[in-house]
Length: 171
Image (cartoon, rainbow, N blue to C red; front, side):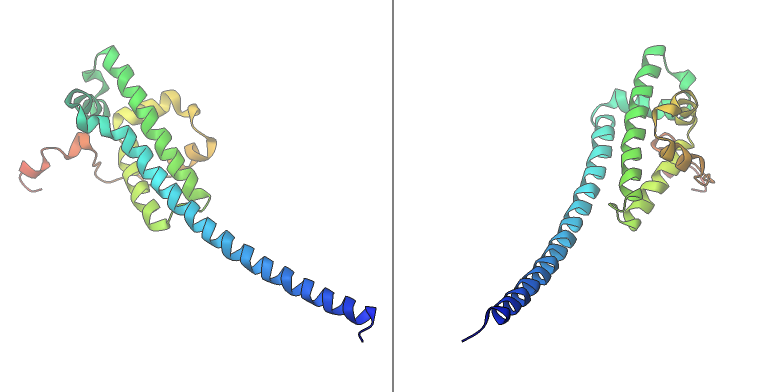
């Protein structure tokens, strides 16, 4: 017959094994959950920017306004400038969210590289640069600092500058 000390020792050992198994299970679940969170963040990032840019593709007038505003705000009426500024705000907020996801490890570095490259070209456009001068404070300090540290592009490639290049000599 076992004494109470032996029973207690066996119980403590079983309890310890159960705790270790539980911790390992939680670690596995946390790792799986982190992967799911990363995939969800990456999908949300793409969806957010798609939601901003989709109307430009579906509505020719909005597409024209976006292209014109990127390159020459003076070509727009006051109402069109306001619409361009609203679109710019939404575009930059989507990019700020994407940057936030990357900063907190929720976005794959290779995917981030593509988003960062896209952003480099767009913030160099005269229209967005002007908007940032006027309204930069509506974005987080972290994002503003990031934008200020972006390496300038040699040749700005946005929808405002890409169109027609295929018909130009030497391109």
